[in-house]
Length: 338
Image (cartoon, rainbow, N blue to C red; front, side, top):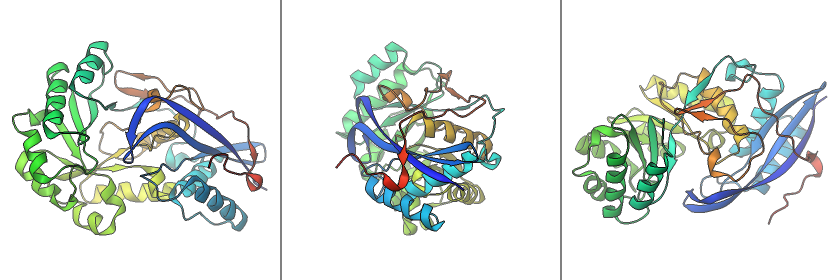
């Protein structure tokens, strides 16, 4: 007989970080625990405003109903949490959740700021050892973005490549103008830079840069048009936006069929979920690209010990970390924040 409990957490960020169209200062969520015959499995439930359509209250109610009925919740973040809890309960090797023999996976560094901040970060060695750096663009003027990209390219080793995340803030014209006179050979890809995603193939044609899709994967009309489209070669999957682990597996397979590589990324979840996703990345055919899993350093503290990142690789410990928090029975749980 399985029993379910939940623990709440609040993780302050060292500095505000843009995610889902908002500046996140504190990350709130829950760890779901399932127990059976002395064994425990864990999954994280942490919908993020601007990315997830459901609230934490919606997710909690979904899990409560699902565990009573034996079904899977409709809300993706709740389905993801319950799926992870069940899979880690039995050390599901299909997803890499058993005792791991993998040493680590490649990850990209993350940067959000202006050109001056970029030069300071480079001087501090923030990107030392990384093969790829994800840079947020589209937050200000096109000229400022161009200056930021130029500062990164000038300051970083020539072998380092940039991933430009535009969060659909640019027009086709402004995106082309931003990339003018820059060394596009050092741009690994541009991730969802355009207000009109259907213009991504044209942007790739004009600039010679590979495009990546993220938000478009969750919009049927855009997914159908862009998966496998010319110049669109990478899909960025955020598992808690997709739902159960089987949905993630399906999305990776669909991308591979269409000749696309997969980059796994988080929705600013805790280091527990980052550890799960690193394992999943290690056993999934994703094309060998670095993954977006190096966000733990954004938090002042965490629910488990943060995995070390050395030379652009996140270490994978033989056993999964255990979130040792204060749990309450799931059926009695109430979201502590309004």
